[in-house]
Image (cartoon, rainbow, N blue to C red; front, side, top):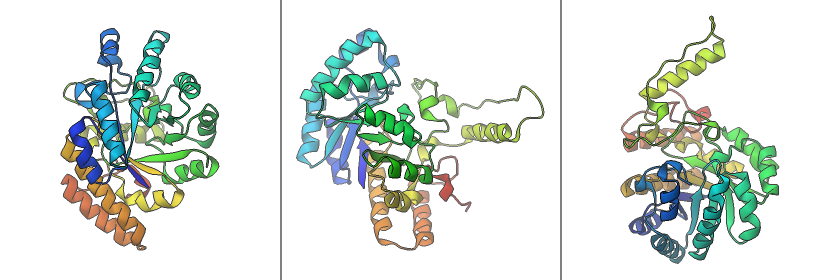
Length: 319
């Protein structure tokens, strides 16, 4: 199973590869896009410059360095949709990135997929979690349009992922691991993540009240869960306990979150994921594996794990 890491600049490539990444991904926004639409309409779901590769020249250097280290590079182009006015810029953008040697493009917009597939037959196209492909029928529909891989949505259980993998063997499936856990179904979320302090709307305390009393028990559960996110740190997202099951069901890659994060945070996450990927392949005793994983989590994040930030809460047990 591949470890897939974000990258934001050339100096990060060597330490990320050394820490175990076999695939890198990142975004670049050309100057003409910034002039016409600015970063608030980012084509890759990051609205701050620290999460963007600076230039096409640096992108090409990152791709070259990744290739020389035996890794691949995928470009994020995963805004949920693009306007007709943006399409000519997008096609020129992808032409330049293809010439720079990118191996894959991570996208969500079905219209963009249909445009790119015949034009770039050698580039691997990934459906982003923003495409919200939450079942095998949705994934098969994207596969008919030419998708090669999918980043499965964060809210799916391992059992649901297993069903998708079994029913769509023609598509490689990746799953998230470590940091960046989201309380919402990302492909349906309309929150805008543009706060310079990186405090996202789901983390701001607010109260939800039912229109009519008494509230449906399911609504009460959802209200309590949403309210609890103001007390959680989504940067403590984990998922280590699920690695043995992800291996068994045929997940092809663990995608680590963190575009815009410090280099050492990315390196630490890769080393932690690699340690437990190796342990999952050699340890047959899951309770022992989970105890070791929880201890490692406490060392890494300085806190006990929580169902809010557990990527796969079906494996969560209160400590």
